[in-house]
Length: 356
Ligand SMILES: NC(=O)C1=CN([C@@H]2O[C@H](COP(=O)(O)OP(=O)(O)OC[C@H]3O[C@@H](n4cnc5c(N)ncnc54)[C@H](O)[C@@H]3O)[C@@H](O)[C@H]2O)C=CC1
Ligand SMILES: CC(C)CC(=O)C(=O)O
Ligand SMILES: [Mg+2]
Image (cartoon, rainbow, N blue to C red; front, side):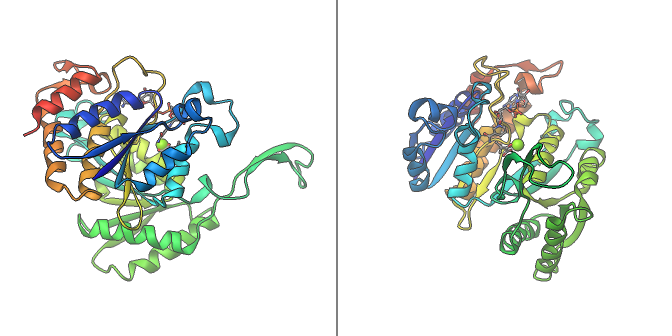
C-alpha cells in the first residue's frame, strides 16, 4: 500500500507530521512517500503542482494532503498560486465526491460557539461536488467589458456550469450515503435565481426515482446556511455544488467545535481518494506548534476506511481521538476552562499513546 504524503504550506507540515506518526504507530507496512505541493512546490520546482508530485499522486493508492496557500504567494499569477495545486489534483484525479462529516464529539459540546443543546449529538454529512461549478467553469478572467452599461470598464467574470452527468454522479453518491445513514437527503441549491441550480434540482429529483427509500428535500443555500446554525441536527446528508459546499462546510465545522476537527475525503468513481482536513494552511498560526492536528488524523482514518480497506484501523484511530478528548486534552482552538491545553505535537503524542 503506497500513500503519497503531500504536506504543503503553513500548518500543513505540522499537522501531517502528526497524522504520519499515527499511521506509523498502527503496525502496518505502509509505504509513504512525501513530495512538495502548493507554495512548497513552487519554491522547489517553480510550480505549485510539480510533475513528479502529480505522478506520485497518480501512482499511489491514496493521498494524504495537508493544506496549501501562503500570503506571500497571493500576488503570483493565478496559475502559479498554491491553491492551484489542490484544484489541479482534484481535477487531474477526477476526485468529484467530497465527503465532509461534521460530527460533534460529546466532550466538545462546550467548545462550539453554539449552545450545547443545539449541537449535542450532531452527526451530519456534507457531500460536496468537487470538480465542477464556478471554480472550474470557463470562460473566466478579467477583461475590458465589451458591451452593456459598463462597456469600456474592466470587469472580472467566472462561469457557473454543471453538466448533467456531473450532477447525476454526485447525486448517486449522496443518495447511497443517505441509504447507509438516516435515509434523508437535503439537496442545497439556488434554483430560485440560477439556471445552473434549477437544472441541478431537476436532475437530483430525477435520480431520486432510483432511491425511493431515501426522503429527499430541497433547500435554498441561504436558508441552508441559516438552518445549519439554527437547527443543524435536522439534517442527515446534504448534497450541493462545489462553491456552496465549500462555504457551508466551513460553517458546519464550527458546529463540531472548530474547523480543526473537520476531516474530508475526496473520492473518484473507484474510491481512490485524497484525504485532507477541511481547513486551509492557517498562515496566522503556522510555525507556532498550536494547530489542531485532529482533522488531519481523522482524515487519515477516512483514508484507511475508504481507499485502503482497513476499517478496523480507522476505528482504532477514531477511538483514540475520542479517548484523548475524554482525557481532557485540547489544542487552543477547542480549549475551554477545566481542560488541559496542549500543542500540535503533544496532541499527536496523545493519539499515538491512546491507540489500542
Ligand atoms: N485545501 C486547502 O489547501 C485549502 C487552502 N486554503 C488556503 O489557506 C490559506 C488560509 O486561508 P483561510 O481563509 O485563512 O482559511 P484557514 O482554514 O486556513 O484558516 C481559517 C481560520 O481557522 C484557523 N484554523 C484553520 N485550521 C486550524 C487548525 N487545524 N487548528 C486551529 N486553527 C485552525 C486559522 O488559524 C484561521 O484563523 C489561504 O491561502 C487559502 O487559499 C483554504 C482552504 C482550503
Ligand atoms: C483552495 C480552495 C479551493 C479549497 C477550499 O477552500 C476547500 O476545498 O475547502
Ligand atoms: Mg474551503
